[in-house]
Length: 375
Picture 1 (tube, rainbow, N blue to C red):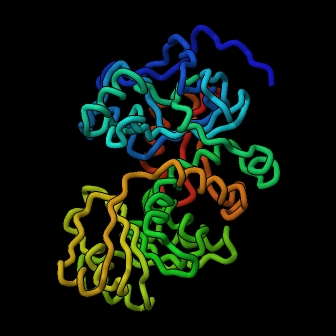
Picture 2: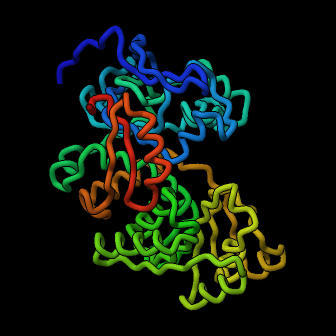
């Protein structure tokens, strides 16, 4: 495919202060350098919590001015001289998790969170500051994951905006793969009524597991169960409403027999909830638990030792996880097309509405994107 010259400038959503919010500005188009690719953005995910980040409510420290964004799907527009596999015009998933090449502890989410080390803050501030709410974005080569457009979009019927749901599903996949979830096992996912937990239910099902979805919102649990069962004929899903009483939670989980694994994505405001301690109580001998949230696990050292329980913290996922996930997607292990996810698309000028909708339109099979070409 022929290479078209990059425009000198392009449109982007730029944040200069939390008080003023984003503004569409014409900014210089980034140029390819060694180790990088320039991507023409088609759809960028609006994660449910971005509004709270960019209005300052969460207190995240990010450098400004900043082009906002999250992970995205786009086409390669230009490549650095050391690119050997990617091709101009290729459809790619653009991941927002950036890692230092000489320091794996220097990890952060581009345009979202600068991480916790001096190295990650330096990379965020000086190199990979800007996100994907723009017509063009610069990304590390290793963050650009090729997508088989013919297979995904023509054979399986996915649209590009539906493929952006990868950004939600990958988080749960990283945790489940880290604890080596096996086909036929039973896994508790908690809470399952949010964006990442709901996506985790779909991922665990695609991995061949029986899922017990825990949550407080009975309406959303019912919707999630219906979505999973209507989109996947072989799906195995049970639901449990989280109770304030730990014994009630334990009894509810015991009804389903052996529990092999747990994926917990509890937010910080879940402190005091007993759902995780209940799940750990019923976890089988040699069971595994992936901790991807912020709720401290409540289990005695003796119980862990006696039952050989494995607790593993996991931040996001690895590049190998992304490659494996895309293989699963391309092989048709997930519901095809609209059966996987319903996507609401907004233009760049509608960013406020997009943020508001994303904060409420959560749960398995739901996502919101901003597209530079929309409206």
